[in-house]
Image (cartoon, rainbow, N blue to C red; front, side, top):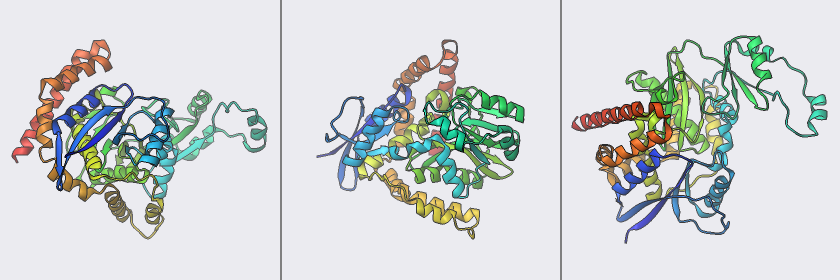
Length: 414
């Protein structure tokens, strides 16, 4: 009798990737691994009252909701602590998505994070104890002086931000004073700007798999991922991918994106705590099938092999590398890559992928070419794109995935 593994989807309003993921799990059907057969199924999770002692039916849960909704976050903590459900991502390190802890950790590990300061709220918290405390312990400061210490231009951005909301490029002390005075209750980072950079990248990581893509932050949200090959040397691409995988292994995240700016051969991570990354078809276009294939493969591996949820971080293993001033940067990256490979069981995953899912590439090509996927494509553009751009985006997305299919077929012949 086949073993049944239920993959739960904890969703907000997404349309496209859940439908594609569910369809691909259905097409994969049964998986033969070792001497056993495994059946994979999916279910969309409802946010309902729950008994802390109930036993959930899920082997794996893909979490896209708990970063902003408390109820599912607490449910995830329960099923991880009590029931060994495997989660993408670790809910206990989600606070690091407010960026600050991620900056601190990666600075200690020796990455080339730009100079970054945290400054107090302009408007204080609504607490009667604030005023007497502040009179004693919060000295007056001039944000322009902090800006001078960092150097202009710089970026002011919310310490818990996302999707570039509240981000300002500041070129002078006067601009900084004005921006700070209008920042309200938001706690802000000030970060050195890497000017005249060569390449802006965003990497999407799913388990041990990472896709490094050229990114244009100034473009419209649906046009930021640029389809371009060879924009980094092999060594730099490997470095950028290692940085992304290092962040994920350190924080126990397995579904994350990171932004790294490359200038003069140096990789500068600027934003790498996004453990609920954008994988909409309208955004990823050509890269969307890669994301679906990677998500299917990693979830299947976690479910079928019974991969254990690792709640605790082994930070000391990383700090031992980062604190060793005798190690050159390249050697540190190599050791971090080995730590990440150990966490993600990269060799075991690759063996599983080759033996248990040998037809996954072909199955995905067939699905992307199917009327079923085209229906998902059209419905997602109708749901997520403003009306006047829908037809343009439908044709753009069709063209992009057709290009991906052609590339896959060409690669299969070589």
